[in-house]
Image (cartoon, rainbow, N blue to C red; front, side):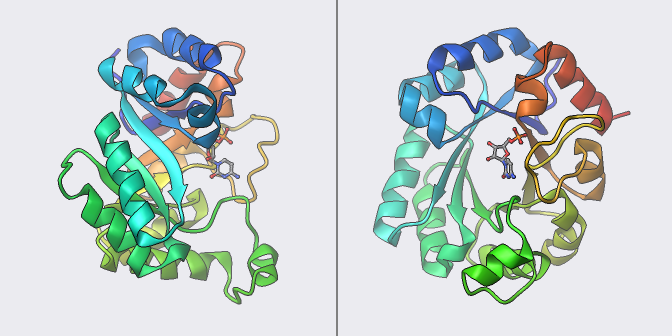
Length: 231
Ligand code: C5P
């Protein structure tokens, strides 16, 4: 089956063999993977290079929040691995996001995505750190900032996708984690939604982790995600 590149499977594993087993099981049906800090730290960049060599698009979720010079260096290192997407924190502000975008300019395959508000956070969590806006307001504020800084898109929860599409227009990517299929157990997401609802609202991609990777049959679960998006 031709992979649906809108579906990015999160390889949230603590060792390489576990990640390899998922990639093997999903085979040609999955074309895109997210590698986060856990797997990158445990398995190293060779895993990312190998995924790219197998023809997979890799979303390297570095969640950069550093001085601009260091952000630029990390983006160049990610680009050298051949990844397709890398993340920077919108909360870091314009200077950090511009540094990431500038660093990616020589690598046309690389999209820089800004993280808005991590999907597990609530309005009360924001207030605790001195942000007196609702999560919805903060997501829109950071998305506008990211767009003006030249980012290629944003990461956002399903509930914010429609409003973001309205603000950003048709062009930018909206990549949506925090999704689960109806009937999935508790996922720890404060603002969950289904993959189909996220795409219908305007998400360009969905990130699906445990729904697929912890399923008794990951390939069947991936097919259910696909069917949920394109009934
Ligand atoms: O919950 P799930 O296993 O589908 O998570 C997949 C990815 O979505 C994780 O790697 C994480 O980065 C992201 N996520 C998130 N907010 C959450 C839970 C997961 O952004 N509350």
